[in-house]
Figure 1 (tube, rainbow, N blue to C red):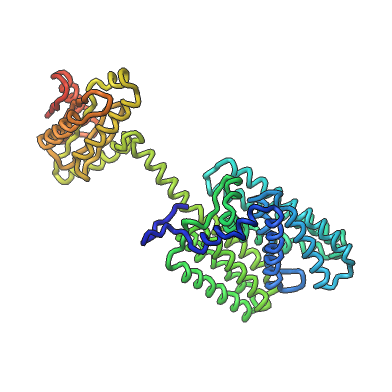
Figure 2: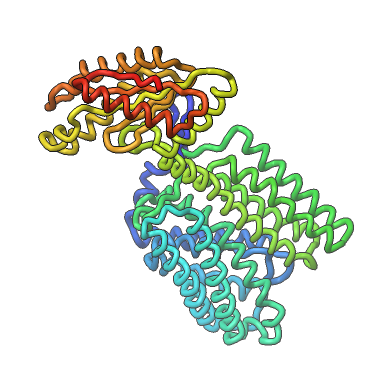
Length: 497
């Protein structure tokens, strides 16, 4: 994500974030593995309660938020975070046993919690490890990383579902007869937790602990990112539409009305294409929580699978939307590589020829003149041989810069090979082009390159005639250049016909 510029010297950093990063408490937690794992346990238990708040029936919610936290922590910090996660899994299993009055002793619940922690952490560690390997290779192909993340999230959450249900049945926390009805909501809920919240937690946690992102080999950061002033209105619009569509399902009790939630893909894609990455994942996290909450508030249990899939679809589309700016930037970069000579910043040969065909047709239709100037550096090979290719490159860049300073915005300078350049001058006669070539020649001759002798350049000029193509004009200008060389170099020659 490209850093934005802000007025009054603000580079986009957040004062509250800087204060938090500089706090003595946070530094102490980051330095101590024990404190870090205790903090993780507390955070994990707190995030669990998000799922409980939006629980629409016992043991069931539209999403499972701690799956996203577990995945992100393992992605950033690896198994260093395992003690805190294990402690959280055991404590929450004890709490669940008491809260739902399961007929199990504390010892049996501890055993169940330990087994569940192994399969929960193991499943998401396998997925996080794979994604960490992909990201750690330094890939900058964001679309491929998005595809990898979504595929890995689906597989690791499925593994967590299968093994988690096995643990619940094996430890008598769930009857085996419930597995057939429970596995799909379990899987989709875990998947929603990962793809909705893992990017958000990864961004937030790596900002608090930048070293984690360094170890990962990627950057998830809040710094240098601010939303547009309209972000809050976009998010509010999404929430209003969300409320309206779910209220409609509540009133009509129609499955068709429940599917209206999928229209939220459109405004979320609007946010994805216009707001910084962090505020996209924040918007998806907030929206997903509200969807899960409204399922509970409006009593939409029978449509819970629709809303589970909607959360996943919205999150996946948003992640792909984040890749659009990168794709656009890459396309612009590729186009620039194709159209601009990297060494001299002049147009490439193919770009010059395309522009020439357009200008020739336009000037012919308008009855205007058009002229080409072909020129190169005299004795350029000697510069390379005597002073090295780096000096030759400096000479090419200098000549290109001097020539472009003598041209109009409507003109185009292209490098067509080696030290040979072409200036395309629409609306310019051969006589006027001769004056332009003379200006360039003088500037080249009077400009010194440190450590090299004065340069000179020779020029050939040809004006367009009736029936000419770019090739025929170029051929005459090239013959004029050869004539200038024969006449002693450091001069311009014109061939009229």
